[in-house]
Image (cartoon, rainbow, N blue to C red; front, side, top):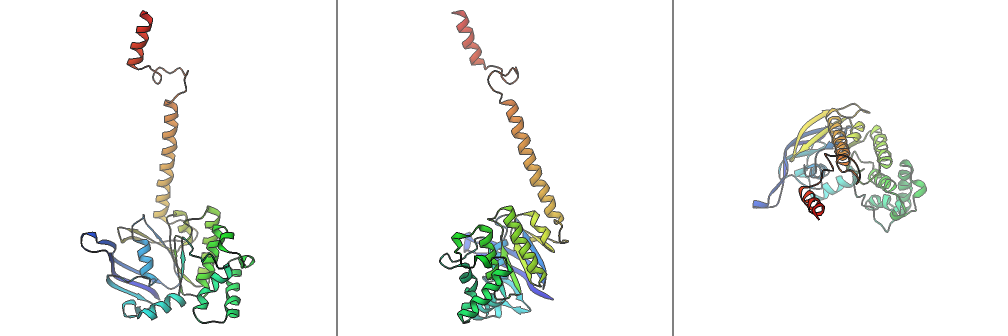
Length: 287
């Protein structure tokens, strides 16, 4: 069953000559239970697409349906309730409140529902335990590593048991081991039945997805199903290109080092004196 449907969705920012087309007639359907990766260069429209899907922004043109309901017909309060209760957001910057403990940050969405403090903390503690962070419940964000902060952010996104989780570059600020931890955690959540959409620049992370969208200039240019555990074919090609570029850079540095020999090296091609130096040497020999 389709959870997300976008039909000819466009998003424009600005006016007149300063108009920027962030999304260009995007057609997209995502079924309940999918694990979708979204890739593309900076400025291709990935974050704008996530904002529209997450009901944080509205299309300028076209129609967006969330769970068979037209977003354009929802009131502002209805959209806010859906964001609170049915969609979990995970951002690259984590957005934890620095003056609240991990437990208080995770419990925050429950406070907005008018739940008692005792019940809030009980549910939040269970969520922290689910992401392996219960022992850090009373730590403040400044006392946690980047990977730990992102795990707390994931717990906060899950605390209302949402149908959909939107993760915009969830590993962008993390090292490889923390990135793996976060993605394994998202994979476990997906196995529990959640629909997950995550934005990434890292082709390696497509091995966690069941489907990969590629964006450029506000358009979805390629839609590729992929097997769990395998890097998507198009992403693998990009990875090879990145590796090839790195190898070319190393080869270029090696060639440069061969040319830039140390003083005293005997290489007539490289150390051949300039015409000015030869003239100066002749003048000295005449004296």
